[in-house]
Each structure stands twice: as C-alpha cells, then as structure tokens.
Image (cartoon, rainbow, N blue to C red):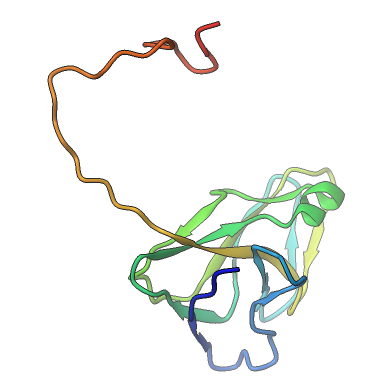
Length: 149
C-alpha cells in the first residue's frame, strides 16, 4: 500500500472533532466528521454545506476527493451533491461537504458525526495538442450510452 504525507490543521474550536481516519486496514477513504456548532436538520430536498473543521495541504501532484458514505446513502438517503467533490492541491480553505437529502424524512447532523469520506489520489495534467482530425474507433461518434454494438 502506497502512503503519502498529508499535512492537516484543525480549525480553532474544533479540538473535539476527530481527525479524519481510515476505519479499516485497507480502506481507501478516510472518514470526515461534521464540525457543526449546533444540531443541523437536513429537511427532505435540502442541501447544506457542512463544515469539517479541518484544513489540509496536499503534496504536489495529489488531489483529495470527497465522497459519500454508503451507509448514509442506503439507510438515510443522504448524499453529496457534487460527488466526488474535488479538493485541488493548492486549496487551503476549510473542507466543507455539500450534503443533500433525497429521502422523505428529516436527517439530523450532529457535531462529530461521520458525514463523508476523503480519498487521496495522484493527479495527471494533460498537455493539449490541437489537431484537425482524431483517430477513428469502432464506436466513433456514438452518443451517450452507445457502445457501437
């Protein structure tokens, strides 16, 4: 398993919020925790930005992806609107999670609750080469969902 150093800083007043952590030995995502100051209610159809109380400095050549927790999605119908959310290597602001409720019931977000997971990934930047023609493939110009068969 590859490892990379991730610098992390807590927001003042968030010393009680756990730092992100991997919940199993081979987990690819580390859990993020809600740093809400009071109980937040996510009504059906609501979207809210939930703070995590942490700031990170990614190593050059890496990004962080914020993804939903499968348990919240299945049991409570809670997701992340821009999933996966991308944290660029030069971002230094507080990490926030845009949660939404597609269920029929209100969902309570409590301080210290696990709300998402964060995956650290290497990044490749493309060098664009403008051409007048692209090479052909069997699929060709087939539209969305079209595999050419």
